[in-house]
Amino acid sequence: MTNRSTQVSYAGAHYQVRKIWGRASQYACVTCSRPAHQWAYDGTDPESLTGYSTGCKSWTTGELIPLLYSRWPEFYMPMCRSCHKGKDLAARGGRIDNRGRRNPGGPTWKSMRRSA
Image (cartoon, rainbow, N blue to C red; front, side, top):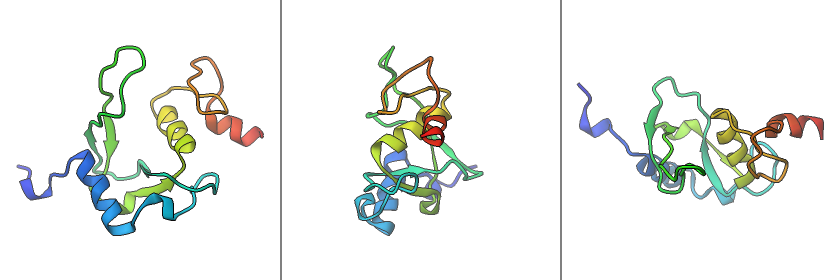
């Protein structure tokens, strides 16, 4: 049985990250070193949770997309918007072009960054 005191929502987890580490804009993006704008879950928590954010909807159906997150702040990293979007889309099997736009048939953002 899960203890209610350990349950944290997606929004609550991000609030805790900001409370402990401050705003992501205080840091450089861990991928490209540009100014960060968002805290991104790194995907390595063995006890990851699934939640929803009203800002993450399917482009085709408009339905909310389930997102993995952690209740632990140490599993988050500062990222710029385009790198964060590329990381999340790649994790879901999507593809984006070098400007952060959806490109279903194209190479992944990571492969484009490596070849640049």
